[in-house]
Image (cartoon, rainbow, N blue to C red):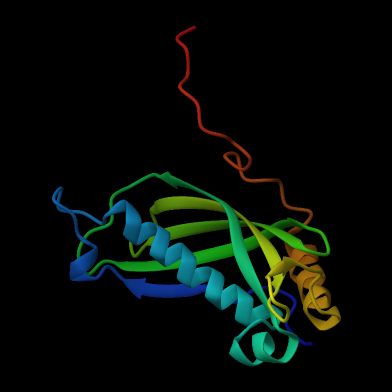
Length: 163
């Protein structure tokens, strides 16, 4: 394997007409779609593209997804998603994505926990990544492991009480 980092950008697109809501900007569900499509690209990078899924009978299930909306995105605006693996074990990935608009402003931040799932039996079940997949995951994680965690990573949802 020659790549040591995830593709940059991981995913790029433009805001589509059917992604615009009644407020005149990108709908919250469209952000989730863009981040989901980014996971598809990450899956391909670690060897879980269609061929990899067929070969190993493994796939990914999303356990948790948090989106922080920072700036509006508008019709036709260019979008690019950058990603990194914050942590992993043999069965799970914790990911961080940053969605930038064409002007460089961060439109949204996304954190996800994904589970590797074996679909070969009667019932899907959690399973370790295949050896070649975990090797890629380790390399991609190592590329950013020394970087500080993003400020909002791991932040749950709550209402802040006035001080």
